[in-house]
Length: 217
Image 1 (spheres, rainbow, N blue to C red):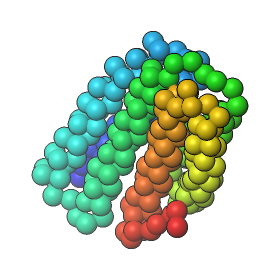
Image 2 (image 1 turned 135 degrees about the vertical axis):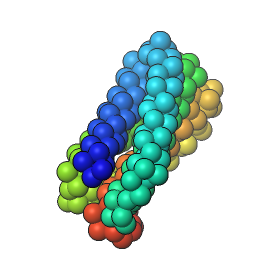
Image 3 (image 1 turned 120 degrees about the vertical axis):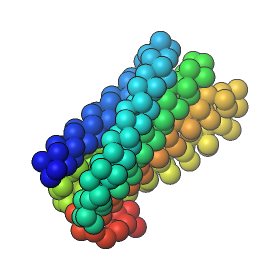
Image 4 (image 1 turned 180 degrees about the vertical axis):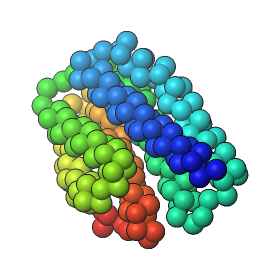
């Protein structure tokens, strides 16, 4: 029975890591679509979200099987509960990738003097956080989890600065207000992606330590 339990836990970890990789690819693809004004690529992100949702559902079903069949002790139960939370956070990240794709479709033409560089920085920091989160989950690396919280502070700072710049640009380009608002939404989605990566890091702390820690305060 214990051998089967260990095998189930390994399968669960592999599925979580697969979900993390699919989610990260969705974020990359959505920002590629935004960067290149590629509507077809944005539509692919939207269409592929069903696969991510299906994988999250399969993860939850496996966890239910593990809990009901094995009746795990406290430490093993914590591992399963953490997996549920991390899978949910990853699925939410994928949803924000879809939102970026939808905003990309709504944007009609670009104007100059907008903070595209800052948006790109937010994107790259978010990817770094997701990569660290995946590795930290695989190896239970608390140092990597701690670094995720530190990166989140940088994303928050960029978010505030970038949105302020976008809102200020409306006065100079009122005819572009719809596009500017969609770019502000994209900034918000990137900031939320970073928040969910931080949630994953906090769940890794809970997995290892059995206590809840807030990493972005």
